[in-house]
Image (cartoon, rainbow, N blue to C red; front, top):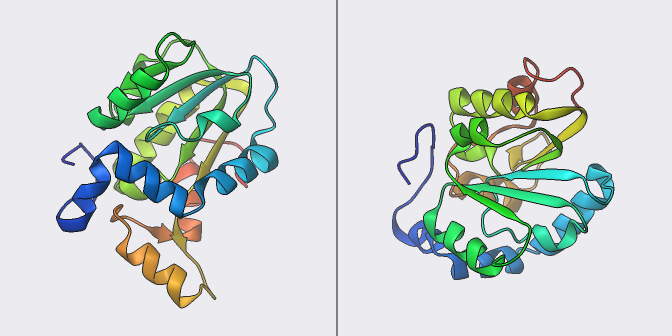
Length: 189
């Protein structure tokens, strides 16, 4: 995709995922809605009215499971942004087109920040910068939840193979993400 700090496979079949409809359908086939619901229930601890920033929002397929929150989506893919803006027309959602560098442009602080399957698309420098920028707009009692593809001991062959061929070309060992976050957050789980 040519975005700064992005390490991503974009040729051949990967190009199809640049379009919103195939991307959204692929998310459904993978069972993303079940994962999103579990993510919200287990990690986000949302309350009505909270401010949520979804960095690397894709087509905002996560939005329906977030409930009554103030939602801001940040996404670099112009096609995905157009899809979100059309879907949210007349709503309270805010959609910002830009890379993680655009985090600097958001107003105020957020109670929850989500980085769902984002960091494996960024090199170490860009990922660290994204985490630093996220930390700068996180409310004092806020929480950043990052869920990403990774490698870990005992991982099954199919899971490891899918991680190796993922569009994001910077999949890290499971502890590599914590290493990136440590300089920017006091508590990491």
